[in-house]
Image 1 (cartoon, rainbow, N blue to C red):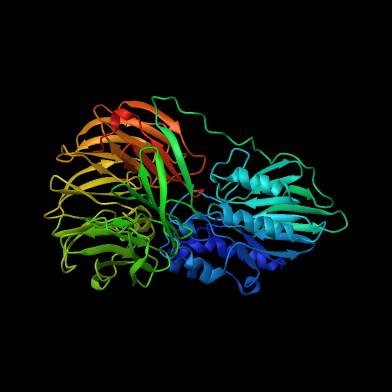
Image 2: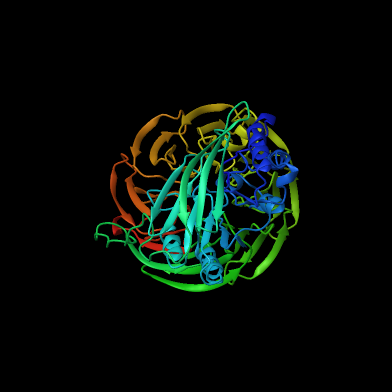
Length: 599
């Protein structure tokens, strides 16, 4: 068993792995389990280097699962992984044990999530085992026992507690741990990236045990083996609560002066794409391909229509007349849907998953979006290609437009301005430099560009940059991980910047000067905030809505509305804030009456 090999483009990055796999091959194992983070960035060249490090004796014997480093920056939505290693989840039987490889990773996101479909698959898979056959699960993220990388881990632990699962092997944390409770042993592995190490598991049929040792390789090639844990396999394990779990939390009622959850709708998959608004009509999309439109009026919500497309990871765009929705899909198409009926007006084949948020540039009648390393503009009325710019780098963010130019940021480390009519580049600005791995991770691959006061604000993992729209000259920079929560430009020459650690800053667009700064003490990822009345309403990663006063940044209160991870950009319709979560729920939250006017 190995984990976290993190093979990069540097030829030396696979050297340690080659040593480890050569030592493993000499032991002639029946098979090898790899618990993910195979590569450093999920780039094609990294997969090539990894496979070159696999000796002939192990080819076809390594069973992989992906880690977050395979999917976080992947413009193919796990397509590269599947092409190299096949579909996941999967299972196989060996030595009287049932082995199941799970995938809890989420495209474009760092944390893990099981989801209803994966849990249903696992329940069926474990239920098909022969009577008396114990099971071993291997996956990237550990669960329970203080780990919180998987937001719905309680459901996973509850499920496996009902089956004869004896062992759970994971990676991700780059250290060795062993926890045992009620007959279930969870073990996390040290990272090959950090040291030449692997784990050797031996099934003893006479004793009915699985003995696991850690094997460390010295520089001279000698091996030092240390016992780690021995797991008993025969008979059913004792029934009991899942290891390290506690009763699931419940949502307390909100005081009357705070926002109050009013209604919920459930879609298939996860709702992480953001909420599109056209007047009183709200459209939510899901990674399961659900597209649902509802009419929101005060405290009531009514269904208008529902459609099924390919998976959707980013928010649809709406044209100026609120007549057409433009929905980006990982199936490789941009769809134009009639906003009143949900019927498809046209679809444009982008040749790659469409993982960016479209922008409607009304003056030219174009829809601008990215697919893999291309920036494309199509006619909003017909879906015909107007222009494309190849070789720009992957983007999962959104462009901005001032009627003359389109402004973008991408994973190649550049922010650019393009002529709206022709796509011709007007200027470029290098945001990040370094090798391809560093640029891909720390460039503006998920940046939502915003305009104000003659500047375009773009962001990287390291902070926001305000560039002159005319020339691309840097006006000011602002430190912090402000890329994932989109910035919000206010009408007075200021903007709200939010870091993923939950620090909200109101800054002047002229010089980047800080008007106020508020630390919320909770993580904020792609969801960010919505502005309504005199407040900013911030959506946290863990399902809390926080009210921040625009005048001075003072926190006014908060309410917990969801138990799953929340990465869906919110929107305000009248006095209702609408957002979604990874369990597929769309939440309608009534805001206090004093902020009824939406800004």
